[in-house]
Length: 464
Ligand code: AMP
Image (cartoon, rainbow, N blue to C red; front, side, top):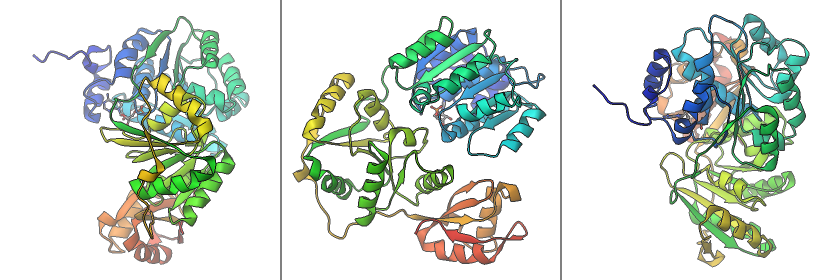
């Protein structure tokens, strides 16, 4: 007989359906956050957990809420609040995958920037789990399209960001409408005083779960460059030329700085897009699509705007400006070096920023390694462009387009090899497909004049 290892999911009080499904998903061992929180969550106790994206936190609360769910009772029994639509989408996806182990579980996504009607329809139809952003969830509660009388589990995911983004009031109002006899699971990447206060107000006897190291030491190479303020731009360009990262997020402090830095890079033949809080959802979607599918190798963003991105294989994180809070630094650089790959975290610091470097050293308990501008190799006629081109097609989910339809028409009728077709994203009214640059013209020619699912469509290049 196989003896279960300490971190085996089999040690948990989970139904055989959920356990079997975890095997199918290839989840063999619990991640540290899961091993620490799941036994407590399954006992029914509240937790406040410090964990970031990539730690497996979604399954930590997802399995908890699924274990309690009664599928025969088509009422919302679990509500997950997330700061951004991107995070809510990721969380929904992961819970849906975990829920494959239980027949007929319905999850509804309630995010702003999406039409209200279909969400209302799904709720009327009966949903067990709701995942959404606070503003829209509150809208549904106010209109009585959502009721929380049967709620068993409330999850706050990235609670610190929800507070940062000004959702405190909305959250408060939502929680007031939930039954007091519920389980509340609070996840936060950082643990400022505001989170402690929130936890005290809304949780009962919560267990605290902290996963010690945020990343394995050595998997992220961290270097600091001390330069004068007016040398920052030149240093940034030199960092790109020297390290030639394939995919990078450059962190800035303000929206204006994001726009300026993105422009600086573009003018110097480094293809970059800015993402900040002022972008409309439509623009934001388009930026994220191009970054995630390899059309645009550099994203320039603020902490809030870059929140919730689940970009695999990020080569480098560059701090154009260091954050005041060392925890934010650790969170930023944790986006590189995931899944066993070595990451690169490069920080530009002006003499005035050296106090921030000191704070980071103290917080991480590691000496900061400083390098000098002169050690960076500048390159002539240097450029970084994405290897893919994004094509936008003017038909989406509403026209019942699925990824397979797009792939099928490109590899079938248009005669392109499947290897040149990259990520396909389907939205309500539009679809996006990434094509290797060399084949983009041919794909565009076909899509713009061809047919998709029996209808004539138009297509255009999203990136220039
Ligand atoms: P999260 O931190 O929830 O965003 O999860 C990060 C990724 O890890 C997701 O793609 C999950 O599907 C995956 N994952 C979560 N738990 C496990 C596990 N125990 N074994 C393998 N992969 C996992």
